[in-house]
Image 1: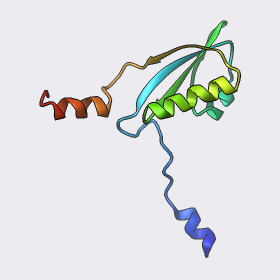
Image 2 (image 1 turned 180 degrees about the vertical axis):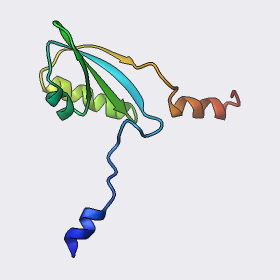
Image 3 (image 1 turned 30 degrees about the horizontal axis):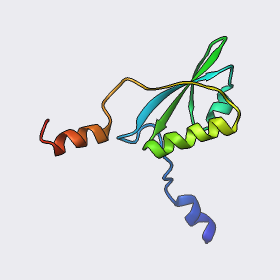
Image 4 (image 1 turned 45 degrees about the vertical axis):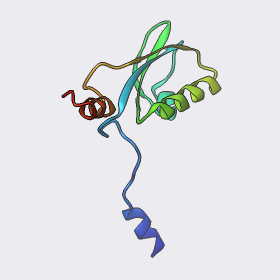
Length: 102
């Protein structure tokens, strides 16, 4: 009976739909495949002739630094990391509410 219970367990893996995640655009020198981007935990965005653009959703800075370490360990050259435009992050809204500035 151990098998069915395991199959019914909910997954707790983070996804880009979790509220409060920051999304980052990460530029890597050279070309990278969508499969390799997925193995690094990133969404594949585009490939140019000189660099690849990945999108990473991070719960916190530790997750972002973890990805940067994986990129370094894979021997990929980091060109730039920028926050992706969009809705404000949950932690920024929480800070505003705490300070009374809504």
